[in-house]
Amino acid sequence: MKLIFIGGPSGSGKTTLSNQIIKKNKNGIVLSTDNYYKTGLISKLISKFVEGFFDRSISFNNKLFKKDFDFIYKNGTSIYDRYYNFEKKTIQNTLNEKNNISFLIIEGIFAKEFSNSLDNKDYYFLEIKTKKNECMKRVVQRDIKERGKDKKQAENDFLKSWAIYYEKVNPNSIKNNTNKFIIEKNTDIEQILKKLFN
Image (cartoon, rainbow, N blue to C red; front, side, top):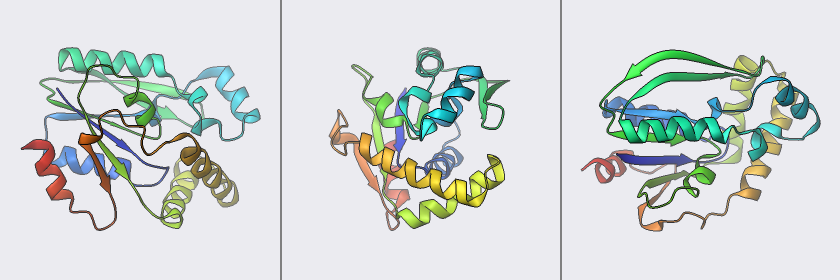
């Protein structure tokens, strides 16, 4: 199975790029790390005390993510769609069986960390580079609409998340640099897709 990781700071367009790839190549699936945050009382409490909780590895349910990743990679099948509700701090599981999956996209702020945990697997890594103010605009709109934040809180949270992302992400930390692509505003996505799928 072909593995494609898409990384970048919050609001950089990872989900948009993932959907663009899936639209052109129907036999794939996207696992978004955004849907694998920890749930329940612990998550509710810790998120109040730890600054930038949802941008730090401690918020990520790596065990559940790895379980889904391993199952899809081994079987070429996915059983559930998962969706994280940021207001309730819960994961909703929807039955949605997909078979004959030939490529898997892993996207999100934890994509790079997860890719570094894989042994003996070749993969492509697409790193999105974009301007801070463009990301901020997208994130603030999303957080007001989907995550119940006011504008000021959304802006403050974005600035923290940007700092945390670049603090923890080493640009040279990809294991297999031969398969790395930098995606910028003027990058020809069609050319990248040809390299990925031809």
